Length: 275
Ligand code: ARG
Image 1 (cartoon, helix red, strand yellow):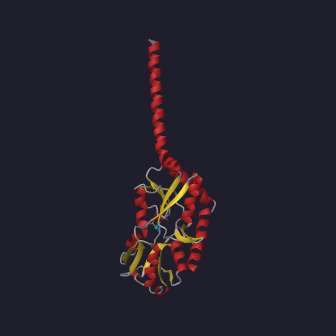
Image 2 (image 1 turned 180 degrees about the horizontal axis):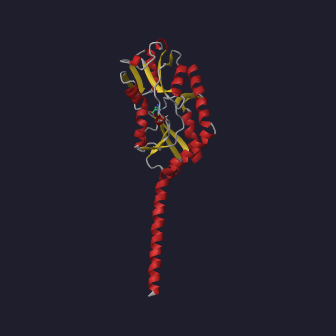
């Protein structure tokens, strides 16, 4: 009788161990699924909207058009660390997150603000940059546009699908918002006077201002929020792919590399404009 009982116990124990091991394994699998897929493919596909100096923009390198920028440097550092190649897919900002959702890219790096709204649909890495919101105007109108009120009824541009659309709606509610797909086209419209102002983050604004001598920041204070800090977007439940990326971001932040990437690309964007 004892023997039978211990036999039953042994079988039960084996069964439990098996079940437990099994569940641990499938948990492990789902945690590393995204990372494994990238490693198996041998390439990290990155979605971005290369209209956003100094983070991602087009530049002639050795006579060839290339996508460069601080986000490109960041993406390259990640691919290096993972030991895979990199492929950039350039698209309008408005399409970046939907491409990620559709699995056309593995991650999206595009100066993307990790807002609570976006966090409902995507995983986000730790933040890597957090520039404040700014208004840009024509120099000749800088004395005229010095307050939120002064933009009442005026045309204020924002990139389509960006948090700047919300900034205009919430903080400049009496302005007339004009959504434009690409940042350089917003700059052209402002230069031509078909819009009166535009909202953009400071680092990006400063880069386009130094390329466009007739433009300047307006003396208007907008509220900025830590919810608008830049993060890398990943599909939901990216598990260890996100953990790895967070580790790399921490390393690059701690060593001052991210700031170095930004400064280097501010210069590169300016040089571009000189040509
Ligand atoms: N930070 C803003 C956002 O997430 C604008 C990002 C625009 N990025 C770009 N590459 N055009 O909505």
